Image (cartoon, rainbow, N blue to C red; front, top):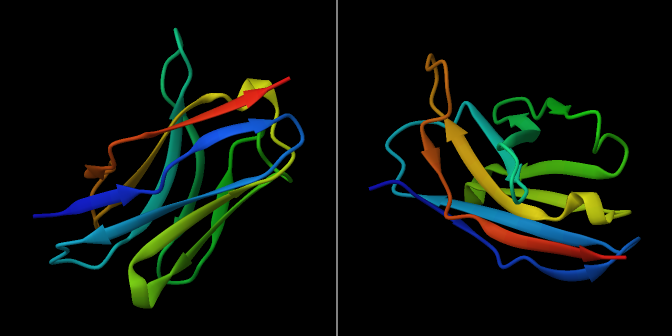
Length: 119
């Protein structure tokens, strides 16, 4: 059974930093991509960042580019989202997800973790 366990989020002041982790277990496949998404109250879930597991190439939403960094530890099947320069607009529930090879969408999702940025 595939499980994605995210680290606890938290409450930080604007300008602060937070690092989220996402540990994948029960995998019977190689991860193709790991992505981070977020959903703010009253808004749709949106893409934040993704990493290609094999080569470490990354993509970011424009809203977080230059402030957030996605990375991974292949040996631990764990991904990370380092968030710097946090803004109140970054307040949301953050989800990690993984995509299997040759699948069009993300297959498995974490439970979500709350990140709150105070002004």
